[in-house]
Length: 434
Image (cartoon, rainbow, N blue to C red):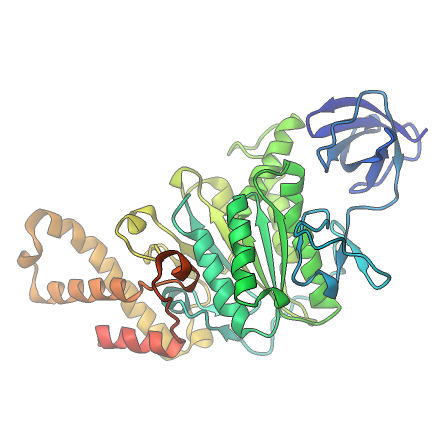
């Protein structure tokens, strides 16, 4: 007998192995006539393995035997997965049948790829998104990470879908979408949008929405990343990787830590939050084989931007787009807080001298606008100096200029979407501030 179950607590099962213990991240099979799969997460003293019930199969009781499988969670990878929707375990969700065949390759999602030297491409390549506020404030640079931060209902998913629609359409690479703990409706709408716009042929989708157990929600981002690594390393493709929502990944890990009675850290999150996020983010990287450019939404609980999990995920990003409820309430779409949105890519070496100098001028005007708003609320706009009135008017025009209609919302509101080239964006700004 390889092992025996000693406790069952929700999705966490403890098993004792007296000899031949399984490796970490190995699947073990419960001998209950259904071969229920458990994933070995970690060990405690005495050879007790903490295992995760990956498929929510509750046909498990104390005293049942468990045997090793000598393999981890393996998902199908390669061309047959393009255009399909898979869950965290590689099972299809689109009703189009199993992904099978002699040519199908499989990959262990928790096995890290070989380490490569730090890689930065020979030249910086900027991808046009067609969205003014992103192309100007947070230029979309191939191989880098962009975070879209905001509370519930401020437009994170809509902005992500617009980016998928605009960039995936013009790119020859491959797109990946990982839905982590978000609404089932949003996953369905994304699939329909991609299908209607003929983008499924270049897209792989991995979904573990909010109805799934925390084990699958914590693994789906890793599964999508593992599949993306294959196309980057083996087929030398450039990958566009979209994750919605990275905070839900932390939340799922936190749920499991609570069930396992782990002592939380100072912020109330699981003790391994930093290493969990770091390992996943480090895998979303570029090397000499290809690039992974990622867009990740970050839910802000209770609109508290200082939340420790939000702050840590943001530190892994090259650019942060902050969506604000106050801006959304003014009817501005996308509801971007222009003063809080930042990017390390906004340098003369990357975007050019013209774009950089314009960004400095715009940011100065917007900061002045914020300071003048308080004064105007007290004494009125007419009491400002002519120079302040002129700058205030320019800032208002800039805010209006960065508002645009989304293509993915056309079917909902009947208003055609806008697409602006980077040159058109820069010209429209020059016309206002020069």
